[in-house]
Structures are given as structure tokens and as C-alpha cells.
Image: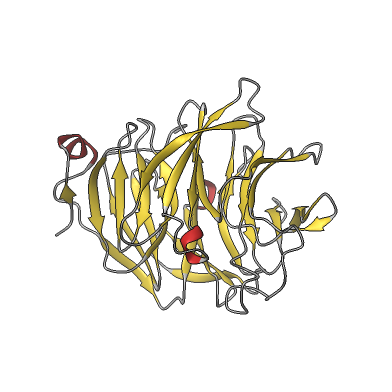
Length: 301
């Protein structure tokens, strides 16, 4: 089964004859996909193997783009098309410059080392928003085991021009994936705190963005998961959320209704839109990279 249609609205977002394609396998934990239009390529992380992978859309070839890579996890592009990366073992947010050098953007908050930046998004004003749970320092598997210097797991906003960084969310146990609504008046953040506290329900929480775009206030829980976890996700230009959800991609309308699922068969970690028309949904799922063409596009495209 390619699709599970739970609401008629989902029918408008899919292509009936499009099928899920497995593009590559052999990773230990595939994560952090980002589409780089100028290179017609997708980059994604194989975190335990400490390597950044590349899928070339022109010939479907796969190669190692960078290794070692600081056990990178989540990625995005900034307004200049540069790759922004969250590094577990580097315990920093870095940027791939046009000349191929990696630049450290931030590795500390108030003088204390970050935990292990996990996922990242860039707002239209150029500010960089990222989550900082402890998964990269919890063990030696996805980074280097260490004690948290900050003592909490939070969400931050970084101004890359001034270096100013502020904590914007501090009420989640393990903030993970994050994304803005198309109008950027809402920030959605996943909480995967159940990995550390069984009483923490897996959820996506919505926050109202302040008028100046520099802070947020909690609006409420957008959705919860009964089995499995949310992780990384993206928002399309209609405001629908395409999110990892256990062994599938779940699609939620902006009102919080799950309208459909795309079963994958492996634990889904993250998704992103790519392709020349940005209608190719790339899916990183445990050991493999998948894709499927959909009738949706990311906001801003």
C-alpha cells in the first residue's frame, strides 16, 4: 500500500500512480536531508558512521560527501544557499561556505558548551533556529558521551550577522524537529522526551511567534503520537505538516487532523522536499533513503 487516505483532503496532495522508491541503503541511522538546488543533489547524514552522503539527481549516483563530519544530524539552507549543519560531536552549528570551508557559527550559550544541536531551520529574516537535545552526548553511538554543561535541552535563535543568541523555548524535555508555518507566525517543535521519561507523550507543540519575529509563546499541543515518535518534519505551502511518524510519513492539515500516511517500512527519521519542482519528497528512514513524488511543495518555493 503506497498511501493511507484518512481524510479527503489528502487526495489533493498525492499522485495516485506515484510509488515509493528506495534510492540507497546501507546506513546505520539516516537523518537530516537537505536539498541543494544549485548542485541538483540531496545531502543527508549517516550519523553513527560520521559521514555526510550525497544523492545526485542527474544520474541517481550516491557518494560520500564528507567524512568525518562531526556526526552531523539536521541540515537546512540559509538565504544565500549555504548548508547549515547541526553537529553532534562538534556540539555546534556550522555553515558550509561557498569555498568549501566549514565555519563555526555557535558552540556555546552563556559560556557553556551546547549539548548536541539536532535540527535547524532558517527564518526569512536570516535568523537560524535550532534544537539542542542531548542525543549526541548520551552515548558514544551518535557522538561523544559527555555531561550536559547547560543542564537542559532547549531551542535557540541565532543571528548569524551579530552572533546574538537567545533561548526561545525551554518547556520541552527533548526538543527535536522544528519548522515554521508558511506565514512564520507559528513555530512547531517536536518533543521526543519519551526517550528519557516514559511519561512524556510524543508530540508536536505549536508556538506563536512574536510580532518582532524574535521570540515565541506557547500556543498548545498540535498533535500527539500513540505509537512511535515524531522526529523531523517539513511544512508545505498550504500549511500541511509532513512528518516522520514511526514507520511512516504522516501528513497533518493545519488544523491538526491527520489526513494521510505514507507507509515506509523502516523507522522514519526525517523528510524534505526536493527535485527541480520541489515536489519530490525525500525520506530518510533508519538504513535507507527513499523518495516519492507528491502534489505538494514547500512554502517559499
